[in-house]
Length: 285
Image (tube, rainbow, N blue to C red; front, side, top):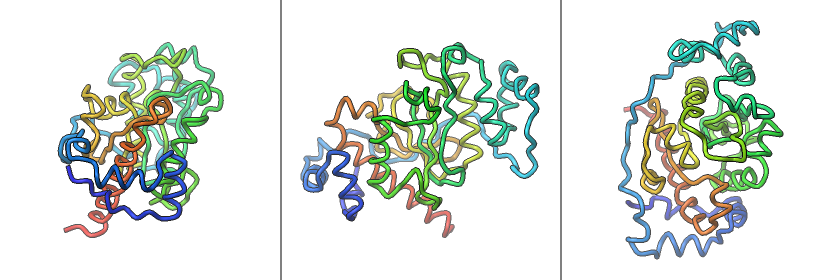
C-alpha cells in the first residue's frame, strides 16, 4: 500500500509527542521513506471492508426517560434478544446505570467497579480497547496508568486530546469488556458476548466518524474476524457503517516498543482517513 502519511507535517506538538512515543523524527522519516517495499507492506492494500454486524440504531435522546432501578435491572437480566433490544433503546444515562448494575457474566461478581467509558459524547473519534486492567478497575476509568499515558501520547501525536472540547479533536474511550478479567487474563467468548451489546449501544449513541480499535480483542469484537492483527492493519474496515482502523494496544507496546513505528503509521493512516470522511460529509457529491 502507499503510505499517505509519509508527508505528514512534523509540527512542534507532533515532534513533542513523537518523542514521548520514543520515536525521533529522523528515525520515523527514515523508516517511512527509505524502508524497502517488503518492509512496509505488512498489510494488504487499503480497502473498505464492510463487516456484517447487528444494526445499531440511535435513539432520540430528547425523548428517552431514565429508568427506575427495577426496570434497569430487568433490562440487564433479560435473556438473549430481549436483553439486546432493551439495551438498544437506552440513552447514555440509562446505559451507564445498567452497566454498573450488570451481572450478566461472572465478571460482575469479581470486579471492584464497572468501567463504562469516558470522554466527550459529541466526540467524532472513538477509541475502543479490550478490557480494564487493575488500575482501571480501581478508578473506574479506561486507559489509566502507564498504558493510559502512552495512549495520551499516541493521541496527541496526531492532534487529539482526551480533554478537548472540539469534536474534531475530542475522543471518547471505551473497552469491549466493562469489567476486569481476574489476573488480566484474556476475555472469554461468553464474557465478550454479554458485553458487546453495551459497546454497540455506545457506538450508536456517539455516532463517531472513526473508530480506532486497539488490540486483538477489540478488533475481533468489532469486525467479527479472527484474523491476526497484522492482517487487519492498514485497511479501512467498517462497523455499523462507521470507519474502523486497527492498531496495537498501548499495553502491547509497553512490552514490544519496537512496534511503535508501526503504530505511528497506523495513527497517521487513521488521521488521514478521518480527514477524508469529514470532507466527504461536509461536501457530499
